[in-house]
Length: 406
Image (tube, rainbow, N blue to C red):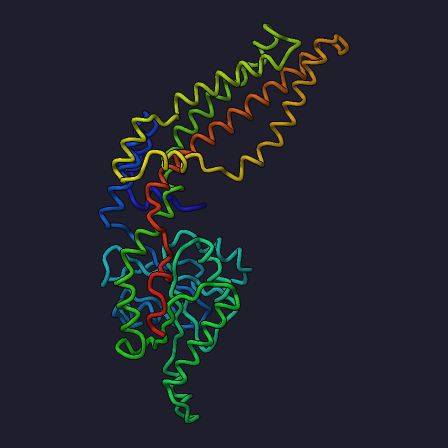
């Protein structure tokens, strides 16, 4: 089951207050509360540390936290690191940040899609891929999944001290060797069509050596952008959770309203289902508009809060959804059926009882489908509006930091 995004940023009482307020028509208040939380900067961050078994993930987490493998609360290393569940550890250097030790991507015997579901991959805000010796196929797969989410990540080549020793034995200049390793990583990211992230060459045993200090500095510097990016990306799901109680209530109401097309259709216009469907569809649409429509006054309030023109907010609200095309086909088919039964009703060429039954069923289905789609569209327009208020150039972290370590 997907984790709640709303309860990540709000307490139980605050989350329920947001849902209750939205259900009572306080849409603007709910959105502005989200904005205040984001502006506060006091946001929890979950950083997933990924990689194959033996890459040094747990050692890296312990070193970042300033603990040794045998200390209380340290991440287990060696043969004990292959836990089947992610484990979170606080990062004392940065408030509200947790480093999550994920199971090795090659240890559960799952294909990648099942592995990502098992570790709830999309629930994390930022990622650190740890790899040793070479760029691996799983590194490319994980980085593509991260990029698809619009989130950022770092790439770590661990155990660089082993590479340094090997270069020394071969008489290779270490500076040139590092340059080749970085270039190989860049080439591999380009090969899998991923924008290269910052690349760090580290040893988990030398916190002051190689690129470890640069990594710690980069994470501290990028933290605020990581927080704001994660929060912006979470807005659509948070709005869905805020809307959920009202969505359920309105679903029940439009379901009952659509059911009324059957008895009233039989009583008022038994042979002309198109008339019944049109009457109930239009009245239901008007009801949903009154319940969920966004007024000019509300748009003006939000426009003033974020210094964005009302016209732009309206355009963002009306952004088309790919689902509209998918919904068009069943709507059209049901409408054709209703029109056909209505035409037949005028011609008296169909058994009356069968005509009434088929017309009532098709009228019910069409009315319910249209009103459900209208409900979804109106809720989605509010989600679009909320997202537009937070879309201040959402740029993934790896673009902001560039290639500082190159």
